Figure 1 (tube, rainbow, N blue to C red):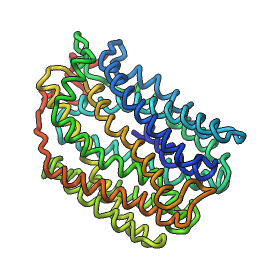
Figure 2 (figure 1 turned 90 degrees about the vertical axis):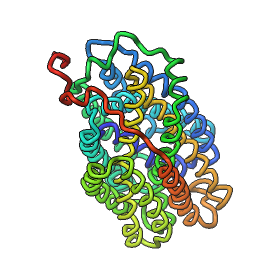
Figure 3 (figure 1 turned 60 degrees about the horizontal axis):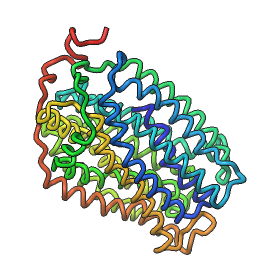
Figure 4 (figure 1 turned 180 degrees about the horizontal axis):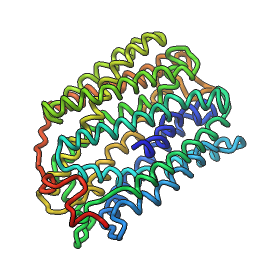
Length: 434
């Protein structure tokens, strides 16, 4: 989780600042590209997951894909933040589109395979809760680096507020770290051989079975409310600090740092609540806390009040990190129990369809700032960019998470404990790879 989080969160957290505010990419072009790449990504995600489920090698189903995806994601991230200074107009749009799509595709390849290992290696919900809490903790460490520290590195250590050199150097450093971590994880992973049955799942029947599953739609759409809200926050936080709070971008370090630290500390408490009350009940409470937190962030006027509101954001986000993947894992258990096939790669990639809505909605949300407030780019910010980014970072996420909190109250996801729950985490002795 540490290795996969660093590249994609630098991309999502800095792409608007880098391309729109510094390089001058028009928000309408940005929105159009985001819609296109989201459509492409929604189509290739199920295919990548299905290919993973069908893979049969002596190294396992997931490991080969992880070893291919890691260097490709690192290389594409470096290229994404290395746009030639001479590019403008259509050339800049094309560079942005090509490398944004490639980065998202290789990130999807990695996460479809990495995510499939959680329900496979930890079939019992309590074990999953602890394992998930640990991996989310490492994700938050990565977020401290890729989000909170990035503004410091790009604008002061390696570059300046209005230059691009800092982004390229930071991307090279992050790419090297991510590659080393992911390769180490992939070579160390121990898959369950019994999950790779001789009969390989077929694409169309598997997809049809998934889309007929009501839980796929209810859990997927509700989870998308959370995912899209946080995507808006991650992509807009630096410009919220610049325009809404009227501070240098480097101050995003403190606001993001507080949110992440509170989230990390909260994982222990939320995991204990899961152990006592179950993942579903805890998920509903976390959704409500997150929704309320965005109202406080909207009212912040300076760094101190922003940090105060950020504490509540961190608490709600921590609860969602501790529970959302557990709810999805329950849905995977139900599917495996009822259909007799372990197709976690395809199922998680199908769920990825909803997360791909992030790109569409963030693109449309940014485009709406031009229509509503006149913010078109850093060179044409309109009359009130501060209000524009309050709406982008706080208003839109509040509406989404409020809808999600209501929907979560109406959803019931049963627990289908698989037979593997009686085995040690690494599989029985006979099944462990030698």
